[in-house]
Image (tube, rainbow, N blue to C red; front, side, top):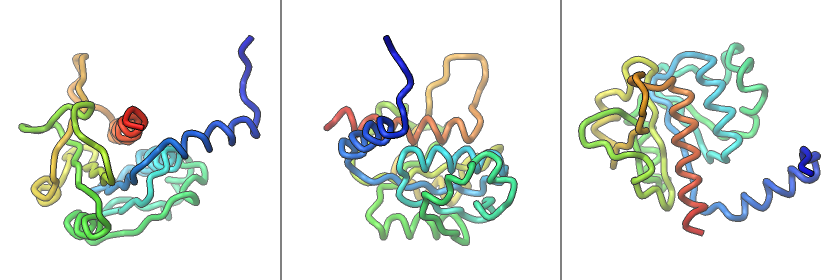
Length: 176
């Protein structure tokens, strides 16, 4: 009979998955402003061991009190910094050895599950309404998108970021 795992069993389970997960994942939030979206992204980033988050341009940071309502204190598990704009954050990520993957519905974008996300990947996610800034768009090494089957044309930015972060990790598990 199945049962929920207790705290010690959860720690053991997560420790095993951490050992099976190569590569680093970073995240650039390009002008995302909604504090509840930021909080949800932070919570996913902490859960999936995102190594660093850049808050670029006028992106809302974890210092905003409204972010905490959704993040629930998980920002303490993240390393983060601000950048003047997305190009500055991308330059820092590249200097850190990351390949830059933009998440965008655009010509030439590849379905995320078909992208090679091996190695160290920095995912760039754009503003809730406008998507990636033009400069960030131009600086990405590759663009990926999340295929959608319904009649809705796009996903909430926090949902899209969560799916993309998970897909990058899932691909690493498939390789190991």
